[in-house]
Amino acid sequence: MSNQGNYNELDSLSIKIIHSGITYVDIPFDTSWRILPYTVLTSIKKIPTEIAGSSVCEFANGETRVFAPGTSIIIPRNVKHRFTNTVDPHTSVWIHWDVTIDPNLDIFNFCEIPPIIRGESSHKIMECCSVIAETNVNDLQGIIRVKSHLYFLLEIVLNECRLLDKYYNFKSTYRTYIPVINYIDAHLSQKLLLSDIAKFSNCSVSKMQRSFFSTFGISIGDFIIKRRLNQVPRLICSGNMTLKEIAEKIGFNDAFSLSKSFKKCFGVSPREYKSISLQKRGE
Image 1 (cartoon, rainbow, N blue to C red):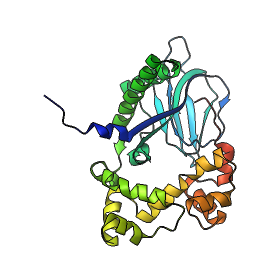
Image 2: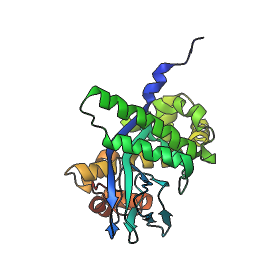
Image 3: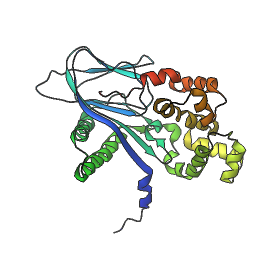
Image 4: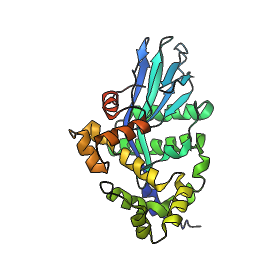
């Protein structure tokens, strides 16, 4: 028996870990409001010698989730939130990670994420996060150990998620649009016309619009705006560029239109994002 699959496809999946850790959550505990440009995965450990304390996760829309030992929670990138604890101490294991498929598409954007993960899946998440946090990656053995647990962790998490209905065709057709998305990314600083994109794809504008919407659940125009805006967090947090310079770089008319679109997308202004998108470690 032989597998005739295209193993080159394996390179299209990227898992990047930014931080990981095991945190003793004392009382009181408050991460303060924050927006992080990567996905947060947190699990509360079940330790027989500890009191069964819980953490509270609050969101900017007023939603509150309480998760206890043996449960886990996923927070997608760029979602404003904070963790607090005012009751009993406990231990949290967590990772901050990015999971993308070519061309730099965040997998979790296409999924319905459960509010709380419980049971055996949460136990496996806790074990994987603990191994990742405790393993030294200064040698090959450590690198392999962390890599293997990251892929296993992703499989567990995705089994708990559900592909959103509007992305029904995504899995089978998205790869045909990789050249189109690469074209869009290469021309973000310019005025992108649908006619130019259709010409690049060798099809009519109407056909391009219909098929693109069928795969990605949004119009090409909205997709382009999102691709532009996704550049902003990195640019405002990692460099000394002004908002005007960023607007010019990614194809907005001016800083005002960029700020307006950014706030509509992320719920905060670029200035507010920069102030609360701190490289905090902890839950």
